[in-house]
Image 1 (cartoon, one colour):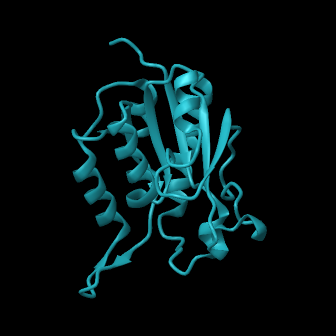
Image 2 (tube, one colour; image 1 turned 90 degrees about the vertical axis):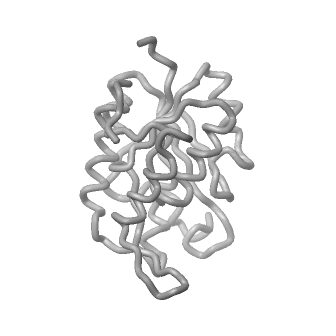
Image 3 (cartoon, one colour; image 1 turned 60 degrees about the horizontal axis):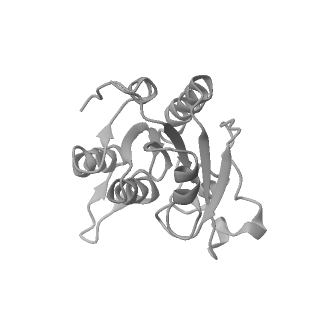
Length: 186
């Protein structure tokens, strides 16, 4: 298998989330461990790490409040950092140009929130021609309540995200699979 030039996207892994009404600690330590393993593995493999922060007028995501910084528990030394104000990391940033300038054709997607900015960036990246590994264990989300009142757990949301991305927009991969570039697990 020829190895494509790869970049790791670390999307919205920021303190802002601790200051939202939906943030909860459940699953946080497991996520932090997987996210750090992915970052460290990318560094070891010479894969550039791209850090992306979400910035908008919302209090938790406003530059002025000081929460738009790396989430405590994660150590990252990115090759480049972008700030976005849309769900896709490609909209309103120079991400695509930077990837192209650096010959990147494959993305490893990780970060917060599983079904929101991570999924949207995955779909967008796939649609514009990148091959994408979506590393669910290195994403984090929170329970959500449907209009009917039904509560969907973070695990249910992650499974749904895998379902809609797998084989159409991304390869669902573990941290180890993504770093090795091997066939992913379903």
